[in-house]
Length: 276
Image (cartoon, rainbow, N blue to C red; front, side):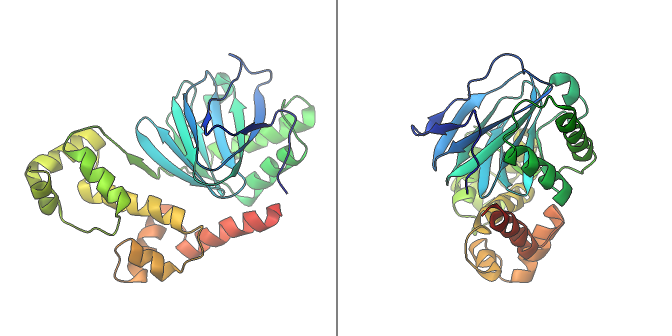
């Protein structure tokens, strides 16, 4: 069943701008939204840090021209004053845990994704089920301190796709996101955009801080995380991403996430079943 909270907001206009005061009422404050499918949360920032969580599905977020795709078994951390925007393809039940700037000092200085262990998920679910907004009781404060302590000690992952408006790179990035199975070499892309392989290689390093091959692999990974919530086989996902063998896809996925695609899928299925 969907969770309900005192300050829940239901968005219906497909454009959503969170409205919060300049300061938090407590050091840790939670708020919740049910957001309809295909809703864009407009770019905004605030003076506190924020943990972004969903009950199931996938949340897409853009931070500093970096695209992050977050499933339910991860949380996205955005530090204070970090502008961000989000998009959800399906209905989502969203929770934001807002943390004062002082307490945010312990967290990473840049946006990242943090995996949620069973302990972390249990603490978060407890806060949600009790409709907790202001973390003010001694019991809730203890829970929030344990939550923050474990989060800052958990190794974050940086599964994101940097983007750019560079006139040579932008069309390449757009096409690779739309057709991740395209394994054309950089030299082939250079001919398509009337440039040279050397020029494009320099642009990738300058604009995106990574090579063409590294960016393309991240694009495949981001797409894979979205496809894994659908009822299609691992081999079919590998094929859609341009891999001739499922084993090559599994190796790549495990290298970046620490789990196999099947383990990743089961983690999300477990969370979804547990919410029913």
